[in-house]
Image 1: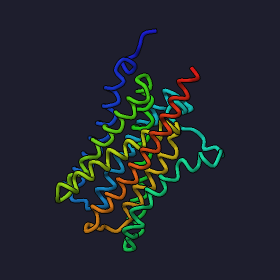
Image 2: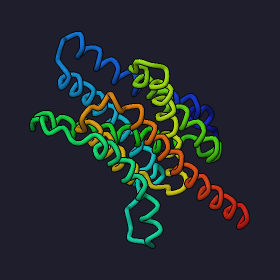
Image 3: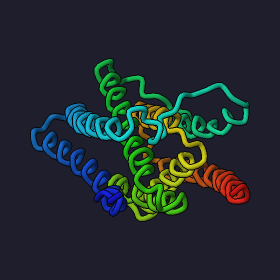
Length: 252
């Protein structure tokens, strides 16, 4: 059977998915900024871009596999306590910022609704692309290649947020933050092979971060703590992945 263009060039198509998403969100934000829509207007414009991409990626996945199982969409079944504990660090990471900064109680209902809608769309769309479609596209290249590529690609596309810092230390820490988070999520996808907990984490993490108070004075400390958490969790996941990969090799 003749290979399709996607099968022949999975890396190119992986890059296209990530770049198109980033461009659409950036264009939406730029237009809203030019039109002076304000913070909520910019956020809503970006949410629209994520909605469009979310619809596109869902249609793509459904056409490839109507069950979506090959993209990691599996039912959350009750299992051993170790399976649940496997994802506990995600919850700790998600609540770290609001615990350290506190919740912004001045946010009104419209802002909260806007944040919830935005972060739901971001969580679903980004995970569906980076841990769903790209994971599926790069299966032929092996798990190690996917983990390395996905970590770097996810980190690079999120680095734009890092260059808003006022000093080199802040910028470096934010870049490391983006790369480590990408690595942790890629490792989780390979070890757990279930995208649902990752979507839930992404939503909760972003939502709690956006409703937390800004603390510029201690931001370097907060990002450093998050980086340490990512690093420790990443090391644990690497050990789990290595054992799983070694056991799989022994059974072949």
